[in-house]
Structures are given as structure tokens and as C-alpha cells.
Length: 303
Image (tube, rainbow, N blue to C red; front, side):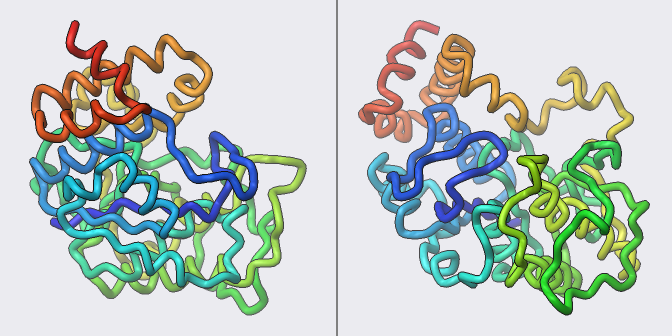
């Protein structure tokens, strides 16, 4: 199965971090190492992987030597996101590129966040037309009612059941084109020309999360499509503990900790560098030459 990574540099703010307008695009050391392992492990266990980015993102990865390594063996597309509708406000819809790329790809396909690693084959776990990593609780503050969402004129609200459980969009598998395309078109119609300029009072990012994690299961129910869950639902405490789940690693909330805790950050980077050196020595040789990652590979030698 083909997977896609999507890195758009147009948004200067996401759920965790902001960068100054006009500043060069960059990722932190732990983000790069997670991305590398995400791509390599997918290739090892599940199939090809393709990167959708834009020229600044392509330039960033090229400086690290990742493009010469053909890390993304399904190719690198730096044009689609660059030409995506400029009527989509990247400051609000910071994950818009994932839906743009999803609409471009043919099923079966998997769209996977660059902070998520799949350590084993998942083909046997696909039990529904659409699969998500897990369901989420409607109690999360970002899942607001329709009265608190801004939509462009003419957006189609019909047939949406607001009681449906949201699902994580960190990893989504679509096995058929018809529903994939219908969902992507509806999500893009919510984002394109949307007049919302920012979330009110710096509140949680309700609009991008609606487009990805709430609209998807709503559209699925309206279409009679079942969404399966790799990790079942949010009530399964054992699935969050790490004791039973050995297939998926998702940094998610840990990124806040890693941004602000240098010792934990160095520890994770050294572990990831050790894993890369052990399993992918040719990749490790290239990464160890970069100023961003050199020290972590030196530390990894002592593990």
C-alpha cells in the first residue's frame, strides 16, 4: 500500500509551535529523526511512500541529504501544494496540505503524519473501507457545535450527524476512491474561501480539526461507510499505555514536552539515531554529517 507524507511550509503556526513570518523553514532534530524513521519503517513493512511538499520544504530536506537517499521511494512532489488554492488560509487550516494530497492520490492509500511511525505491517489490520488510528471523545474542547464554526457561503451542512465520534487523522487508510474523493472535496469546500481569520480568543483549533477529524466520520455515516479503528476507541485505556500497542508510535502531545525539555529531547534523539544506525547504516552515514543531527549520532555510538 502506498503511504504519503505531507509537509506544507505555508502555515507558520501549528498546534505546537510558531515561526516568524518570512523566516526559513526548518524542523527540529527530533522531528527530522521521527520523519526519517516513519518513512523507512513504512517502506520496510508496508510499501512505498511519497512526499508532498513545496519548494521550501524540498530545499530543507535536500540540505539534509534525504532527497539523495531516496528516502521517499514513491517520489517527491513539490508542485501540488505550491499550486493549491490560495483562498485557503494556512494560518488557520495548517493541515490543509494533507487533504489536498489525499484528493490527488488513488486508493488504496494511507495518509500519515510525519510524527507517526508504523513499526510493523498493518495490511491484516485493515477491516473497513476507511481506517483511522483511533476514535476520540466529543468532550475534547476542539469539538465545538455548528454555531461556533465559520464556513464559506454555500458550504453543504446537510446530512451531518453531530453525535458521531471524531477520529484521529494522524493515520488514515482509504481503500476506495469514491468516498475518499467525496470526503476530500467536502473538506476542501469548507476550507477554500472560509472567512475565518483566526480562532476566537486564541482558543483550540476548532476549524482545522473539524475539517479533518470530525467531518470525516460525519461524511462516512452519511454515506453508509464504516470507519474502522486500529487502536479501537478512546475508552480502551490499555491501548494508550504502550503495553499492548507495539505497532504505532505517535509523538503528538509529547512534542510540547520535547520542545521544552532538552534532556528528554536529547534522550529520544539518541535512541532514534541508534535505531537508524543499527537498521539503516547507509542513511545514518548521511544524517551523521548534518550539523543538526551530528551530536545525536555521536551519543548513539555509546548506547
